[in-house]
Length: 184
Image (cartoon, rainbow, N blue to C red; front, side, top):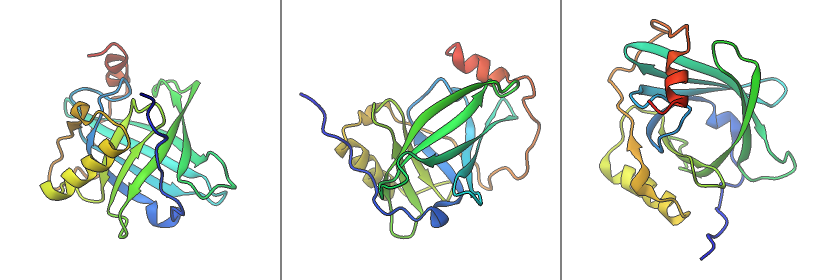
């Protein structure tokens, strides 16, 4: 049976969406270390209407990060279908990689979000806080399942309270990225 097209948020207020989001859970991906903790994204609106994206995670006590940009896939649409572009590998950013970033759900207060993409290979549950209560988490998981995601693949992301401040020791060699590509 063919899966229905995902419903995305309409009328996303990009200004309200900006700021820091903590990854509460996600599908494992080759772009993130398997032992990553305190994973977060910080979005900043640029003057040209695009978004600066800073993704960070800590692995083996070191901070790995990658910076990119996001923009509306169709500027004339009110759907929250964005494209994100990063240059990899992070230690020698020369290869552009573009992906879909669809906001499938955002609460009225812009505190919780479910983000995915059309192939349903990637899924993120995000929050403005490092932890959310079980009831809210289960509601967000249900929203993803309603959009055709196999939520059994979700992996909760460990977060500390308080979260790390500043940059911390950097993984300057991009070892986490290489390990991720190799499935480690």
